[in-house]
Image (cartoon, rainbow, N blue to C red; front, top):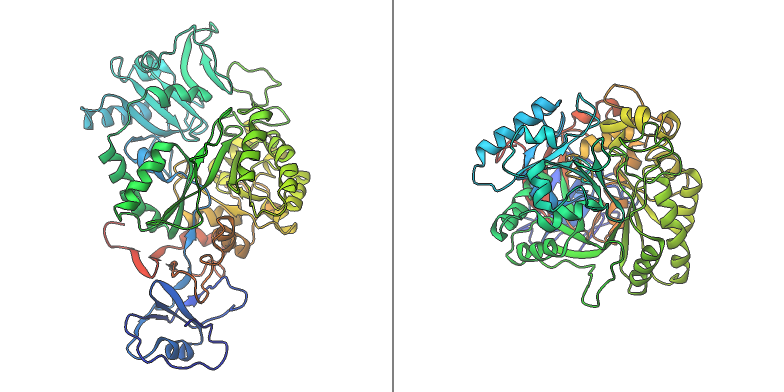
Length: 558
């Protein structure tokens, strides 16, 4: 039996196995139950929500009563876009991210971190690093092969850019990948060259990363599986109960299935398989809206352009400062042909498969809308819920089209802090940069938008994500587009109720409502009532998945 305790209730004869949470600032995110004094949990689900005495009646005699001491109780946070399996890979590499995510501020520190990692991993055939950021290095440039040859001229060195859309190699790495001065740029990718216009500099963009995926040694299966199981702890520490692998390769899906079959997943994981330009969806590719061992495949992923901070996103207007080797009219580039996008969307929609499409630049968003909107009309009877991932530079006219077509934009709302100054001064200029992740404009149109961190691009810190969405403060302390700040409630909906809707899981998650899964997070303060400026000081106290505590601050090494 479930109840919201809105009327008379009958006591349950036995409360054994029932937990009642009281003395909490309860944020239900359920408009039908806007206020509550207690929440009862039984068998992994929410039994009752409402006044304390009525919830206790529903819980029955013998129920466990737990006081939260005035802390805030909220629905578990939902990761609407990220790379769960990639997080496990990144954790095994040298951390080259800038503060606050990592220690690297200049090229000398980057080189030293790599040397230290190499000394600690003498058996590793390659030296690998994750998360370098040219926009935040003191030199304001990518490491090139000469910088990395100074670390090792014998072992291949491969560094992944923080966006995961570029990489940097030393000379042995280029040789291992088979990249020579005669190697042509692949469609949808660039091999950057030195001043002679021919010699590879070591920096690879977009589709040129396929050389890496084909040749780079991969961890053995036991390492991959244990890494996936281990990274759950980090997500749980941020209050996250549902995560995404948002560009899964077939091997990663197989790995996730094995971890799930072994009973080692306790977070819900939704994977979207990446289909590249020119690919087709095989008949053996299947999706599901139900979990098997906390895992399911939710749909397919298209990557239509690149990264604004990496200057590979596809815009309608040029970059303020183009990357090396590009002219003043450079505005990024497409990764897929229109024909490929149309084919993949039609194949997916015909089979009721959800499509999530990476589109940062407004020209990439145009490509998606021009093709997807007519297709949505052709399949009007199917609940498709396509998602534009990032949607960073969506224009007002595009938002209106998104609203009319019932497309969900998932904004990379952490950008104003991490790269806002860079976007304003080097990427887009003040006017365009002030409208990135236009959450207020989307809310005005009634769009149920979501927001995300895109981990491991930035850590999956949901409190900081809320803080950035509500304040839009840059690293320098400037405010980027104050008129596009999210309200506290809209920001919270974007990682709870709206997030559940994006996943077709609004009947199971996203609010503290009777009958839903007991996916919950306890915070040190209510994010709806604290001053938005101090929101980043709020801490995750405990996380529950299916009514079981999976993280408690101070236990197991916070």
